[in-house]
Length: 282
Image (cartoon, rainbow, N blue to C red; front, side, top):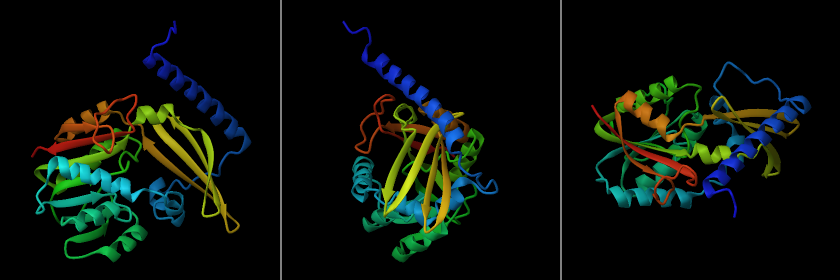
């Protein structure tokens, strides 16, 4: 009889992946250490406004986004008169779709380039604005705030996460709702591939991933037109317990948790996503 049950088998796999990640990080440090990054800016300030960001992630599925939003709308049936803010909206794919269904939406993103492109879709019930989640000055309050596709926890501390939640609270109406669509950090950590190369539009992107002090780090190295580039992504590996604590600290009540875009229940071992819906208590 196999001495391992399913759960312990998964734990063994996670442990082996962690050992492999450590060995790979050590080898990469000595063999090909990347150039020092600009410490004057947060990593996302340059990377999200780079055309290479959109080249690397240009395959994001609009059908998947619409599937997710439709499932949410069918479940909660919000009135068309509600005002929605899409925080870290990128080029506005979620905002544009919600507006096409008749909703009044404002999209906010740190990247001027993304907002410039999104603004080509603006109308009297769809607006876009450059903004930082740490300092939201939107001049309006909203019934629903969306933060989709792992656009949270880009910072180095829970204190900054709490600051962001307080900023969101400030633009939400009393009893308004916040939806955060995050990855399942437990599953991501177990399945982390320490090194891979993805070619997009003729550019080989070298991706190095590791977990360090509770932060999932991805180094992105590539060359184009004779110039070498090095960008980095960093996302805190927040768990459900972390979000529950943050919500309690900032006056939100967690009301629903899902594990995928079909709104199936969250399972820490198997779910791809951690989708949280919280209510703003005034």
